[in-house]
Length: 589
Image (cartoon, rainbow, N blue to C red; front, side, top):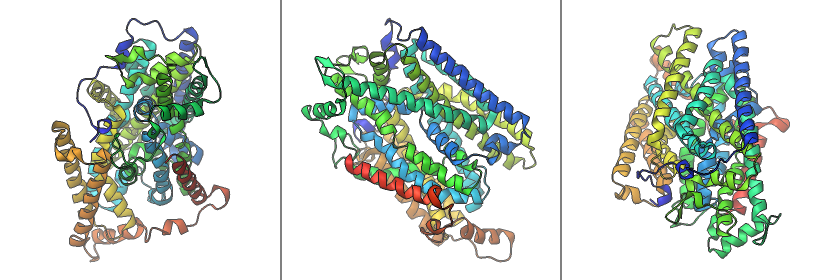
């Protein structure tokens, strides 16, 4: 596995420490913009919480926004929950190190969101579930529900919250010259305030606002970086920044930086086949089976909104390559051309690329505009944390408490969910120093997911597209596949030179190999351990119903199902999105 996709456990200190003793990066206007944004978003969140309190205050209203969400709010919320400071910081780092390559995580998401909208969301809405583990129990059995509940809570704490806090803390420490942990504690306190009180409605309302702020701030720094790259070295600034970028990468012999699909043996360790085979394993788990993400779809007012919302999010996912990854590549070109000073994050002649995004903000943006970027960074962090906290509270309430104590009333469920969210937030903050040991934060997170996702993806896909998938086979695959993934991850971390860690394609292909093993195992076990035939009992009748009602008879069935029709038909926009993505890949191949 190449350096870009290997977890190096060497202790890497936060980049913010390199700025010790430097002058203040933000002026009074910048700080005022950031503070006003914080106050405004907390006010909006608490207002939504007050709205919830004035209504019936039921558990469904708290956890699923009363199933009232329309497709625009679902799409914006999906995008905002997904995009965190992890993306802003790490994609800029990856853009500086490898070019546009890691943009594949964003563009491939468009295809996966089409799967969510057309193939998975209809089942989720029709079955009336509140959580994804609930769906697995209805399709298979309770063991599957318990396993997915445990994995979902763990990944929400580690992947969605702790990693987001780490990257947000690194860049805010650099910009504000305040200790990283203090920044994290303040933002966690404010985010937890409106999220724990207001539930999913407060989360979605604030996420819609934060998406706009996030995109505006990212577009600002991308535009200014392109402008700075334009003109000539003696007279920087102009509209020919894109042409200059291409000239610089060619003159440096780095033309592959502009390519999204790389050949076998590429030095950055992510060839085209790893993306096409490995990403779907990660993407289907993340977008179609992760409670933190799918909860927005579960809150849809009807099936059509649940189908169209993910497709709209897929359209938005086109933007991050240009707004999050491209700035890192532009920083590399500006640095090569002598137009960007990165001495503050250079150690022993080597640029510590974790700090590239913060350096771009301080070096390229004029005073007064930096506060907008700080607001965008806080928006990214708060939206991700709030979404994960809401999913954790839902999982604990419905899949733990409600299962053990089925008669638990709605108000008590809400109270338990709030307590669970608060505990999860404390645990995530405690994990931040440990996670700071990853060299590339995004690749570290992706590597963890690549070992967790395969059994869940396998069980979900096989169960939805094959009515013969049995409950015992699914439970065995989930447990065995999870143990296999943990074992491989532990082996690779402790023995980085072992043969498994040297396979071409890195963690992406590892995900594909593990998923292939899980799919083959589940199919074989389903044949050997089929669900018992109906004998008139309630249990066996349920086994027969599961496959018939919670699995498609053929992959084409959802495409033939009646849709809204007209310009807002999810099938039309799905086809349009797929065509646009194929054209983009052709251009940046």
